[in-house]
Image (cartoon, rainbow, N blue to C red; front, side, top):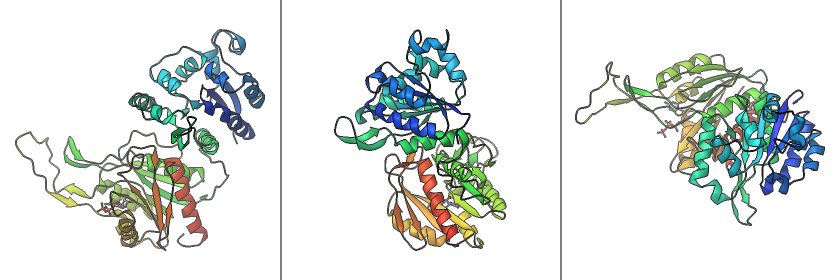
Length: 409
Ligand code: CTP
Protein backbone atom coordinates (compact mmCIF):
# COMPACT_ATOMS: atom_id res chain seq x y z
CA UNK A 1 0.00 0.00 0.00
CA UNK A 2 2.86 2.40 0.77
CA UNK A 3 5.25 1.12 -1.88
CA UNK A 4 7.53 3.92 -3.06
CA UNK A 5 6.77 6.13 -0.03
CA UNK A 6 9.54 7.22 2.33
CA UNK A 7 8.70 8.09 5.90
CA UNK A 8 11.23 9.96 7.99
CA UNK A 9 10.42 8.63 11.41
CA UNK A 10 11.58 10.90 14.24
CA UNK A 11 11.84 9.27 17.65
CA UNK A 12 12.33 11.42 20.75
CA UNK A 13 13.03 10.75 24.42
CA UNK A 14 9.81 9.53 25.94
CA UNK A 15 9.05 6.19 27.56
CA UNK A 16 6.51 5.68 24.76
CA UNK A 17 9.50 5.25 22.41
CA UNK A 18 9.24 1.51 23.03
CA UNK A 19 6.07 1.54 20.92
CA UNK A 20 7.97 2.76 17.85
CA UNK A 21 9.19 -0.77 17.18
CA UNK A 22 5.61 -1.86 16.52
CA UNK A 23 4.79 1.23 14.45
CA UNK A 24 7.83 0.64 12.23
CA UNK A 25 6.93 -3.02 11.80
CA UNK A 26 3.42 -2.07 10.71
CA UNK A 27 4.70 0.57 8.27
CA UNK A 28 7.15 -1.95 6.82
CA UNK A 29 4.29 -4.44 6.43
CA UNK A 30 2.67 -1.81 4.22
CA UNK A 31 5.91 -1.63 2.18
CA UNK A 32 6.96 1.86 3.28
CA UNK A 33 10.60 2.86 3.28
CA UNK A 34 11.19 3.95 6.88
CA UNK A 35 14.24 6.04 7.78
CA UNK A 36 14.62 6.60 11.52
CA UNK A 37 16.13 9.75 13.01
CA UNK A 38 16.49 9.49 16.79
CA UNK A 39 17.40 12.13 19.32
CA UNK A 40 20.24 11.34 21.69
CA UNK A 41 17.68 11.09 24.53
CA UNK A 42 15.52 8.62 22.60
CA UNK A 43 18.43 6.16 22.69
CA UNK A 44 17.87 5.94 26.46
CA UNK A 45 14.45 4.45 25.80
CA UNK A 46 14.89 2.18 22.78
CA UNK A 47 17.95 0.72 21.15
CA UNK A 48 19.28 1.89 17.83
CA UNK A 49 19.88 -1.73 16.83
CA UNK A 50 16.20 -2.58 17.28
CA UNK A 51 15.07 0.27 15.04
CA UNK A 52 17.80 -0.36 12.47
CA UNK A 53 16.83 -4.02 12.25
CA UNK A 54 13.11 -3.31 11.95
CA UNK A 55 13.46 -0.42 9.48
CA UNK A 56 16.18 -2.18 7.47
CA UNK A 57 17.91 1.19 7.13
CA UNK A 58 20.67 3.00 9.00
CA UNK A 59 19.44 4.92 12.03
CA UNK A 60 20.51 8.56 12.14
CA UNK A 61 21.29 10.24 15.46
CA UNK A 62 24.10 12.75 15.17
CA UNK A 63 24.78 15.41 12.56
CA UNK A 64 28.50 15.06 12.46
CA UNK A 65 29.48 11.51 13.21
CA UNK A 66 28.13 7.94 13.16
CA UNK A 67 25.32 7.25 10.69
CA UNK A 68 24.55 10.98 10.23
CA UNK A 69 27.85 11.39 8.44
CA UNK A 70 26.93 8.55 6.04
CA UNK A 71 24.68 11.10 4.40
CA UNK A 72 27.54 13.49 3.60
CA UNK A 73 28.06 16.98 4.98
CA UNK A 74 24.35 18.02 5.01
CA UNK A 75 22.45 15.03 6.41
CA UNK A 76 19.43 17.15 7.43
CA UNK A 77 18.91 18.23 3.83
CA UNK A 78 19.60 14.92 2.14
CA UNK A 79 17.40 13.05 4.60
CA UNK A 80 14.51 15.47 4.24
CA UNK A 81 14.88 15.48 0.44
CA UNK A 82 13.90 11.81 0.41
CA UNK A 83 10.80 12.28 2.59
CA UNK A 84 7.23 11.87 1.50
CA UNK A 85 6.16 12.41 5.09
CA UNK A 86 7.69 13.12 8.49
CA UNK A 87 6.26 11.26 11.46
CA UNK A 88 7.44 12.19 14.93
CA UNK A 89 6.28 9.55 17.41
CA UNK A 90 6.57 9.93 20.29
CA UNK A 91 6.98 13.70 20.10
CA UNK A 92 8.07 15.15 23.44
CA UNK A 93 7.14 18.64 24.67
CA UNK A 94 10.81 19.43 24.03
CA UNK A 95 10.88 18.64 20.29
CA UNK A 96 7.52 20.37 19.81
CA UNK A 97 8.81 23.45 21.63
CA UNK A 98 12.04 23.44 19.66
CA UNK A 99 10.41 23.12 16.25
CA UNK A 100 7.79 25.76 17.18
CA UNK A 101 10.62 28.14 18.06
CA UNK A 102 12.76 27.37 15.02
CA UNK A 103 15.50 25.81 17.13
CA UNK A 104 17.68 23.42 15.16
CA UNK A 105 20.32 22.07 17.51
CA UNK A 106 20.42 18.40 16.63
CA UNK A 107 19.84 16.22 13.58
CA UNK A 108 16.09 15.70 14.11
CA UNK A 109 15.17 19.33 14.82
CA UNK A 110 17.38 20.49 11.93
CA UNK A 111 15.83 17.94 9.58
CA UNK A 112 12.33 19.08 10.59
CA UNK A 113 13.18 22.70 9.96
CA UNK A 114 14.10 21.68 6.42
CA UNK A 115 10.81 19.81 5.86
CA UNK A 116 9.54 22.45 3.39
CA UNK A 117 5.95 21.81 2.35
CA UNK A 118 6.02 18.10 3.04
CA UNK A 119 3.47 16.74 5.52
CA UNK A 120 4.57 16.53 9.15
CA UNK A 121 2.63 14.42 11.64
CA UNK A 122 3.41 14.66 15.34
CA UNK A 123 2.15 12.22 17.93
CA UNK A 124 2.78 13.86 21.30
CA UNK A 125 3.40 11.83 24.44
CA UNK A 126 4.00 13.42 27.81
CA UNK A 127 2.66 13.86 31.31
CA UNK A 128 -0.81 15.40 31.51
CA UNK A 129 0.43 18.47 33.38
CA UNK A 130 2.90 19.18 30.59
CA UNK A 131 0.31 18.44 27.90
CA UNK A 132 -2.17 20.85 29.44
CA UNK A 133 0.35 23.61 30.17
CA UNK A 134 -0.13 26.96 28.42
CA UNK A 135 3.39 26.81 27.06
CA UNK A 136 2.83 23.45 25.40
CA UNK A 137 -0.58 24.47 23.99
CA UNK A 138 0.91 27.67 22.60
CA UNK A 139 3.66 25.70 20.84
CA UNK A 140 1.17 23.18 19.47
CA UNK A 141 -1.01 26.00 18.09
CA UNK A 142 2.02 27.62 16.45
CA UNK A 143 2.88 24.37 14.69
CA UNK A 144 -0.74 23.78 13.66
CA UNK A 145 -0.77 27.21 12.04
CA UNK A 146 2.43 26.20 10.23
CA UNK A 147 0.60 23.13 8.88
CA UNK A 148 1.85 20.43 11.26
CA UNK A 149 -0.84 17.83 12.00
CA UNK A 150 -1.18 16.33 15.44
CA UNK A 151 -2.22 12.81 16.29
CA UNK A 152 -3.68 13.54 19.67
CA UNK A 153 -2.59 11.55 22.69
CA UNK A 154 -5.05 9.34 24.48
CA UNK A 155 -6.44 9.32 27.96
CA UNK A 156 -5.10 6.43 30.01
CA UNK A 157 -2.42 5.26 32.41
CA UNK A 158 0.66 7.48 32.25
CA UNK A 159 4.28 6.69 33.11
CA UNK A 160 3.80 8.37 36.53
CA UNK A 161 1.19 5.71 37.37
CA UNK A 162 -1.75 8.12 37.34
CA UNK A 163 -4.49 8.24 34.75
CA UNK A 164 -4.61 11.24 32.49
CA UNK A 165 -4.26 12.65 29.02
CA UNK A 166 -0.90 12.43 27.33
CA UNK A 167 -0.45 8.77 26.45
CA UNK A 168 0.85 8.21 22.92
CA UNK A 169 -2.00 7.57 20.46
CA UNK A 170 -2.58 3.93 19.60
CA UNK A 171 -0.39 2.23 17.01
CA UNK A 172 -3.54 1.75 14.88
CA UNK A 173 -4.44 5.41 14.84
CA UNK A 174 -0.86 6.50 14.12
CA UNK A 175 -0.48 4.06 11.23
CA UNK A 176 -3.88 4.90 9.79
CA UNK A 177 -3.14 8.65 9.92
CA UNK A 178 0.09 8.01 8.02
CA UNK A 179 -1.78 6.01 5.39
CA UNK A 180 -4.53 8.62 5.19
CA UNK A 181 -2.04 11.45 4.77
CA UNK A 182 0.10 9.69 2.19
CA UNK A 183 -2.46 8.10 -0.06
CA UNK A 184 -5.83 9.20 1.26
CA UNK A 185 -6.62 5.52 1.59
CA UNK A 186 -7.48 3.56 4.64
CA UNK A 187 -5.95 0.63 6.29
CA UNK A 188 -8.69 -1.80 6.01
CA UNK A 189 -9.26 -1.87 2.27
CA UNK A 190 -12.89 -1.04 2.89
CA UNK A 191 -13.75 0.68 -0.34
CA UNK A 192 -17.31 0.30 0.73
CA UNK A 193 -18.59 3.60 -0.65
CA UNK A 194 -17.27 2.95 -4.14
CA UNK A 195 -19.58 4.51 -6.69
CA UNK A 196 -21.69 6.32 -4.05
CA UNK A 197 -22.24 10.00 -4.60
CA UNK A 198 -21.76 11.75 -1.31
CA UNK A 199 -22.30 15.35 -0.23
CA UNK A 200 -20.60 16.58 2.93
CA UNK A 201 -21.12 20.07 4.32
CA UNK A 202 -18.53 21.67 6.57
CA UNK A 203 -17.69 24.85 8.46
CA UNK A 204 -19.95 27.65 9.56
CA UNK A 205 -21.99 30.17 7.66
CA UNK A 206 -21.82 33.96 7.82
CA UNK A 207 -24.86 36.18 7.72
CA UNK A 208 -23.81 39.66 6.69
CA UNK A 209 -25.10 42.75 8.47
CA UNK A 210 -23.13 45.07 6.20
CA UNK A 211 -20.10 44.55 3.91
CA UNK A 212 -17.68 44.16 6.83
CA UNK A 213 -19.73 42.58 9.61
CA UNK A 214 -21.42 39.28 9.91
CA UNK A 215 -23.05 36.95 12.40
CA UNK A 216 -21.22 33.64 12.41
CA UNK A 217 -20.09 30.79 14.63
CA UNK A 218 -16.76 29.22 15.57
CA UNK A 219 -17.00 26.15 13.28
CA UNK A 220 -13.65 25.49 11.58
CA UNK A 221 -14.68 22.81 9.09
CA UNK A 222 -12.48 20.12 10.68
CA UNK A 223 -15.29 17.59 11.23
CA UNK A 224 -16.71 18.02 7.72
CA UNK A 225 -13.26 17.84 6.12
CA UNK A 226 -12.49 14.64 8.07
CA UNK A 227 -15.78 13.21 6.80
CA UNK A 228 -14.86 14.14 3.24
CA UNK A 229 -11.43 12.49 3.59
CA UNK A 230 -13.06 9.40 5.12
CA UNK A 231 -15.51 9.11 2.22
CA UNK A 232 -12.70 9.58 -0.31
CA UNK A 233 -10.69 6.85 1.40
CA UNK A 234 -13.66 4.57 0.86
CA UNK A 235 -13.74 5.61 -2.80
CA UNK A 236 -16.94 7.66 -2.75
CA UNK A 237 -17.49 10.42 -5.25
CA UNK A 238 -17.39 13.40 -2.87
CA UNK A 239 -18.82 16.91 -3.09
CA UNK A 240 -17.62 19.05 -0.20
CA UNK A 241 -19.60 22.22 0.41
CA UNK A 242 -17.95 24.41 3.00
CA UNK A 243 -18.32 27.75 4.71
CA UNK A 244 -15.17 29.89 5.05
CA UNK A 245 -12.28 27.82 6.39
CA UNK A 246 -8.51 27.89 6.55
CA UNK A 247 -8.34 24.19 5.77
CA UNK A 248 -7.07 22.94 2.43
CA UNK A 249 -9.72 20.86 0.65
CA UNK A 250 -8.63 17.30 -0.08
CA UNK A 251 -7.62 16.56 -3.64
CA UNK A 252 -10.20 14.71 -5.70
CA UNK A 253 -13.31 16.25 -4.14
CA UNK A 254 -15.67 18.58 -5.92
CA UNK A 255 -15.22 21.59 -3.66
CA UNK A 256 -17.91 24.27 -3.41
CA UNK A 257 -17.03 27.19 -1.13
CA UNK A 258 -19.97 29.18 0.22
CA UNK A 259 -20.48 31.88 2.81
CA UNK A 260 -24.12 32.31 3.77
CA UNK A 261 -26.87 29.89 4.79
CA UNK A 262 -28.73 30.76 1.58
CA UNK A 263 -25.68 29.92 -0.56
CA UNK A 264 -25.18 26.70 1.40
CA UNK A 265 -28.85 25.80 0.85
CA UNK A 266 -28.64 26.42 -2.88
CA UNK A 267 -25.41 24.45 -3.31
CA UNK A 268 -26.76 21.50 -1.30
CA UNK A 269 -30.07 21.50 -3.13
CA UNK A 270 -28.35 21.56 -6.56
CA UNK A 271 -26.01 18.69 -5.66
CA UNK A 272 -28.67 16.66 -3.83
CA UNK A 273 -30.43 15.79 -7.10
CA UNK A 274 -27.47 13.62 -8.09
CA UNK A 275 -26.51 12.35 -4.63
CA UNK A 276 -27.00 9.13 -2.68
CA UNK A 277 -25.90 10.35 0.73
CA UNK A 278 -25.86 13.75 2.46
CA UNK A 279 -23.96 14.39 5.69
CA UNK A 280 -24.57 17.87 7.07
CA UNK A 281 -21.74 18.66 9.45
CA UNK A 282 -21.95 22.39 8.75
CA UNK A 283 -23.04 24.78 11.50
CA UNK A 284 -25.59 26.80 9.63
CA UNK A 285 -26.89 30.14 10.83
CA UNK A 286 -30.51 29.89 11.92
CA UNK A 287 -31.14 33.62 11.50
CA UNK A 288 -30.06 36.24 9.03
CA UNK A 289 -30.49 40.02 9.11
CA UNK A 290 -33.72 41.06 7.40
CA UNK A 291 -31.61 43.41 5.34
CA UNK A 292 -27.88 43.53 4.58
CA UNK A 293 -26.79 47.16 4.43
CA UNK A 294 -24.96 48.06 1.23
CA UNK A 295 -22.61 50.46 2.98
CA UNK A 296 -20.72 50.02 6.22
CA UNK A 297 -22.89 51.00 9.17
CA UNK A 298 -21.33 53.92 11.03
CA UNK A 299 -20.78 53.68 14.75
CA UNK A 300 -23.43 55.68 16.57
CA UNK A 301 -25.26 54.66 19.74
CA UNK A 302 -27.15 51.39 19.92
CA UNK A 303 -27.68 49.17 16.90
CA UNK A 304 -30.74 46.98 16.54
CA UNK A 305 -30.74 44.31 13.87
CA UNK A 306 -33.99 42.71 12.77
CA UNK A 307 -33.43 39.07 11.97
CA UNK A 308 -35.43 36.46 10.14
CA UNK A 309 -35.01 32.68 10.08
CA UNK A 310 -33.00 30.99 7.35
CA UNK A 311 -34.39 27.95 5.57
CA UNK A 312 -33.81 24.67 7.37
CA UNK A 313 -31.98 22.82 4.59
CA UNK A 314 -32.19 19.34 6.07
CA UNK A 315 -35.84 19.71 6.92
CA UNK A 316 -36.59 20.76 3.34
CA UNK A 317 -34.62 17.84 1.90
CA UNK A 318 -36.15 15.43 4.42
CA UNK A 319 -39.43 15.87 2.56
CA UNK A 320 -37.98 14.98 -0.83
CA UNK A 321 -35.18 12.57 0.08
CA UNK A 322 -36.73 9.69 -1.77
CA UNK A 323 -34.51 6.86 -0.54
CA UNK A 324 -31.37 8.92 -0.07
CA UNK A 325 -29.54 8.71 3.25
CA UNK A 326 -29.40 11.95 5.21
CA UNK A 327 -27.31 12.48 8.33
CA UNK A 328 -27.46 15.55 10.54
CA UNK A 329 -25.34 16.90 13.36
CA UNK A 330 -26.63 18.50 16.53
CA UNK A 331 -24.37 20.68 18.63
CA UNK A 332 -26.18 20.92 21.95
CA UNK A 333 -25.61 22.43 25.37
CA UNK A 334 -28.37 20.61 27.27
CA UNK A 335 -30.96 17.83 26.89
CA UNK A 336 -28.69 16.27 24.27
CA UNK A 337 -30.52 13.05 23.51
CA UNK A 338 -34.01 14.52 23.68
CA UNK A 339 -33.14 17.45 21.40
CA UNK A 340 -31.29 15.23 18.96
CA UNK A 341 -34.15 12.73 18.72
CA UNK A 342 -36.58 15.58 18.02
CA UNK A 343 -34.30 16.86 15.23
CA UNK A 344 -33.89 13.37 13.76
CA UNK A 345 -37.67 13.08 13.44
CA UNK A 346 -38.36 16.64 12.32
CA UNK A 347 -35.71 16.48 9.59
CA UNK A 348 -36.52 12.88 8.62
CA UNK A 349 -32.88 11.83 9.11
CA UNK A 350 -31.39 8.36 9.09
CA UNK A 351 -28.78 9.23 11.71
CA UNK A 352 -28.02 12.19 13.90
CA UNK A 353 -24.62 12.82 15.46
CA UNK A 354 -24.91 14.79 18.67
CA UNK A 355 -22.26 16.38 20.83
CA UNK A 356 -22.22 18.45 23.97
CA UNK A 357 -20.31 21.57 23.01
CA UNK A 358 -19.83 22.56 26.65
CA UNK A 359 -17.47 19.60 27.16
CA UNK A 360 -13.76 20.28 26.67
CA UNK A 361 -12.21 18.71 23.53
CA UNK A 362 -15.59 18.27 21.85
CA UNK A 363 -17.00 20.18 18.95
CA UNK A 364 -15.94 23.59 17.64
CA UNK A 365 -12.23 24.25 17.04
CA UNK A 366 -11.13 21.02 18.71
CA UNK A 367 -9.11 18.22 17.09
CA UNK A 368 -11.28 15.68 18.88
CA UNK A 369 -14.97 15.11 19.35
CA UNK A 370 -17.12 13.20 21.82
CA UNK A 371 -20.32 12.20 20.06
CA UNK A 372 -23.31 9.98 20.26
CA UNK A 373 -24.90 8.56 17.12
CA UNK A 374 -28.65 8.10 17.23
CA UNK A 375 -30.58 6.13 14.61
CA UNK A 376 -34.22 5.92 13.60
CA UNK A 377 -34.83 3.11 16.08
CA UNK A 378 -33.73 5.60 18.77
CA UNK A 379 -30.65 3.51 19.59
CA UNK A 380 -27.86 5.62 21.01
CA UNK A 381 -24.25 4.68 20.29
CA UNK A 382 -21.82 6.53 22.58
CA UNK A 383 -18.34 7.01 21.16
CA UNK A 384 -15.29 7.78 23.31
CA UNK A 385 -13.18 10.89 22.82
CA UNK A 386 -11.81 10.29 19.37
CA UNK A 387 -10.05 12.34 16.74
CA UNK A 388 -12.44 13.81 14.20
CA UNK A 389 -10.87 11.44 11.65
CA UNK A 390 -11.88 8.45 13.78
CA UNK A 391 -15.37 9.83 14.43
CA UNK A 392 -15.76 10.33 10.68
CA UNK A 393 -14.87 6.71 9.96
CA UNK A 394 -17.37 5.48 12.52
CA UNK A 395 -20.10 7.61 10.92
CA UNK A 396 -19.27 6.13 7.51
CA UNK A 397 -19.31 2.63 9.03
CA UNK A 398 -22.83 3.32 10.29
CA UNK A 399 -23.91 4.69 6.91
CA UNK A 400 -22.49 1.61 5.17
CA UNK A 401 -24.47 -0.58 7.59
CA UNK A 402 -27.61 1.29 6.54
CA UNK A 403 -26.80 0.81 2.86
CA UNK A 404 -26.25 -2.88 3.45
CA UNK A 405 -29.53 -3.18 5.25
CA UNK A 406 -31.05 -1.59 2.19
CA UNK A 407 -32.55 1.19 4.22
CA UNK A 408 -32.10 4.09 1.89
CA UNK A 409 -29.86 3.91 -1.16
N1 CTP B 1 -29.25 22.63 9.53
C1 CTP B 1 -29.82 22.86 8.29
N2 CTP B 1 -30.30 24.10 7.99
C2 CTP B 1 -30.30 25.09 8.91
C3 CTP B 1 -29.78 24.86 10.19
C4 CTP B 1 -29.27 23.60 10.47
O1 CTP B 1 -29.84 21.96 7.45
N3 CTP B 1 -30.78 26.28 8.58
C5 CTP B 1 -28.70 21.30 9.80
C6 CTP B 1 -27.29 21.32 10.38
O2 CTP B 1 -26.32 21.24 9.37
C7 CTP B 1 -27.27 20.09 11.27
C8 CTP B 1 -28.71 19.93 11.71
O3 CTP B 1 -29.50 20.70 10.79
O4 CTP B 1 -26.90 18.93 10.56
C9 CTP B 1 -28.99 20.41 13.09
O5 CTP B 1 -28.54 21.74 13.23
P1 CTP B 1 -28.78 22.53 14.58
O6 CTP B 1 -28.28 23.94 14.40
O7 CTP B 1 -28.25 21.73 15.72
O8 CTP B 1 -30.35 22.45 14.69
P2 CTP B 1 -31.51 23.42 14.38
O9 CTP B 1 -32.54 22.64 13.63
O10 CTP B 1 -31.03 24.68 13.76
O11 CTP B 1 -32.08 23.66 15.85
P3 CTP B 1 -31.55 24.64 17.04
O12 CTP B 1 -30.45 25.51 16.46
O13 CTP B 1 -32.78 25.39 17.41
O14 CTP B 1 -31.05 23.72 18.11
